Amino acid sequence: MSNEETQPLLACRNVFKYFGGLAAVNDFDLDVFPGDVIGIGGPNGAGKTTFLDVISGISPATSGDIALNGTPIATKKPDAICHLGISRTFQLNAGFESMSIEENTLVGAAFGLGDKGWFPRMTYNREMRERVERALVLCNLQDKADMVVRDLPVLDRKLLMLAGALATEPKLLLIDEPVGGLNPHEVDDVMEIVQGLIKEGVTIILIEHVMRFLLQLSKRVVILHHGEKIYEGDSEGLLNDRKVVEVYLGEGTADRLQHMMKNRAQNG
Ligand SMILES: Nc1ncnc2c1ncn2[C@@H]1O[C@H](COP(=O)(O)OP(=O)(O)OP(=O)(O)O)[C@@H](O)[C@H]1O
Ligand SMILES: [Mg+2]
Image (cartoon, rainbow, N blue to C red; front, side):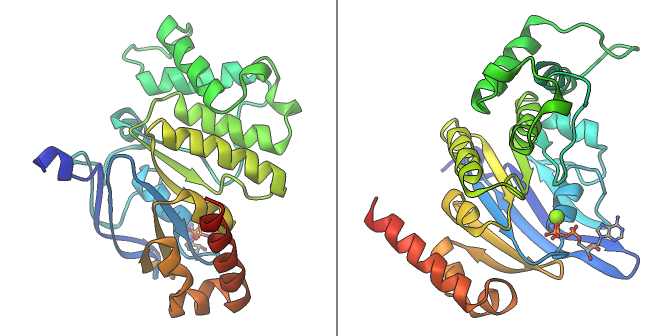
């Protein structure tokens, strides 16, 4: 393999994030390769969102190294990190309430392309509109482009955030709890959409408490507890890991998920 093939897209080494005396992220290492889908799980307060905040520059690391394609980004600002190729969604829905789905996504496309002028860009060019069209199709929002955000149900708001992030055409997409608060049918809808992104080759780090979503989509799973990585590996190993079962899943959930994974394997 050449160097290019072996170099991680994202490399995190000895990353710490302190809030006062609390190590929300505690000596965390992670390599993400192109095409990876990394699922991050763990109890409430484990440091999952903080880790995404650190990577995306919203809340810079206290110490440690983070590199995107070999470029150090740990001290860069969120806009610079976005322009280098990392975009994200948030755990709580965020959108411009009085604007349409299309207008919101255009903001993502314009931001992702980077405004080199002195004044914020007031017009949208063809490349931005094409990015929006692609992002809306990927998120199955193309028929709702004119709907105004304040009128949208939760599912569409979540998909809109995803579309806005995709419109920046990221090298790495960070998704924080994309199905939190959704019903099982809606979870399936989002799962199908993320599967589509994976097919397109989008590299993803996703956080989720809904374990069937996390396990079915992730190529590698990481479990955090008190800011530390207590597990990294495949879904099967996760369900047999004593510490993960003890601090996070519990016996009942682990058994139920084992059955689900077995049925899935049998049914192809
Ligand atoms: N801005 C902040 N100031 C102080 N403490 C914070 C801040 N943000 C997060 N924390 C603390 O850091 C720890 C990790 O929080 P974080 O939100 O990353 O957890 P999480 O794993 O995403 O949890 P959840 O599953 O509930 O979303 C928690 O103890 C939290 O209270
Ligand atoms: Mg969180």
